[in-house]
Amino acid sequence: MSINGLPLHPLVVHAVVVLSPLAALLGIAYAVRPGWRWALRWGLVLVTLGAALTAFVASRAGESLMAARGLDQLPTVHTHQDAGQLLTLLLLVDVLVVALAAWRLGGPSALVSGRGARTQRGGALDLLVSALLVLVSLAVLYAVVRAGDTGARAVWG
View: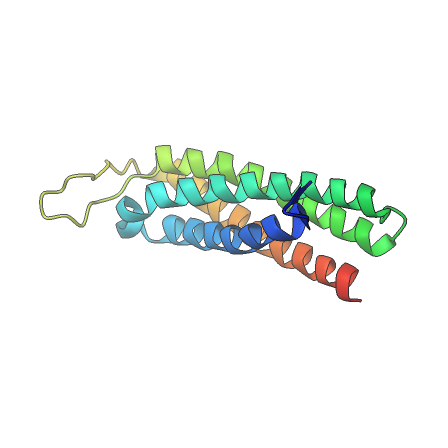
């Protein structure tokens, strides 16, 4: 897989490196700042979907690059491949958790009219959803750093 002769994997990876931490940070902010939820909800959903999609494309393009260049014998490439698969899996879990959080967690609107506000249900389930969103977001941050580090080591030594 390539674009104008350039392998697709390193091109798409740049989107993953930007969107994954952004999705994680937005997820943490959404969980811990109820007053910001009205402004973050749809951005969080879209960025998380974009991160998961680009991670999936990067994973498939990486497999294609590995096969085309005969890199499947290098242990550093396998380590990076495992880290990338973990990141992709965590981002898919993050999509589900973000969808649940966007549906379940309400919050006030900063607009004077109150338009866009959602009723806060409160209770233990909201706390559980918020905690789950923070945990998954922290796992995504770890996984993107690990995938990036192992990828850099595979390429640059």
